[in-house]
Amino acid sequence: METSKVEINLREDAVIVVKNGEVQRIPKPDSGFGETSITWQNGKIHAKKVSYTVK
Image (cartoon, rainbow, N blue to C red; front, top):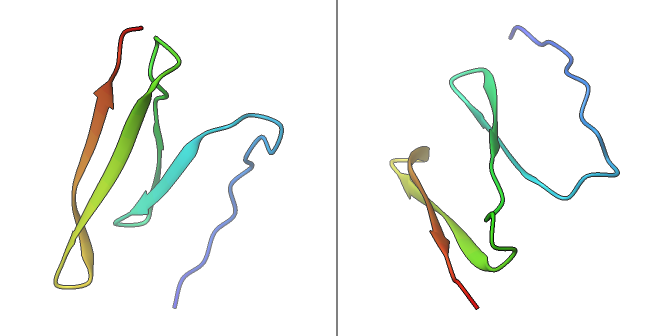
């Protein structure tokens, strides 16, 4: 099993996904309000959905 290291800023609120060995940062809603959803299929990440709310 191959491993690698990545630096992540622990002072920043974020959703981090590791998919196919790559780190992907999911952006937070620009409005400051919203929801992030991850869909799994057969034990793997299938889709990511970010919805925004404008207040």
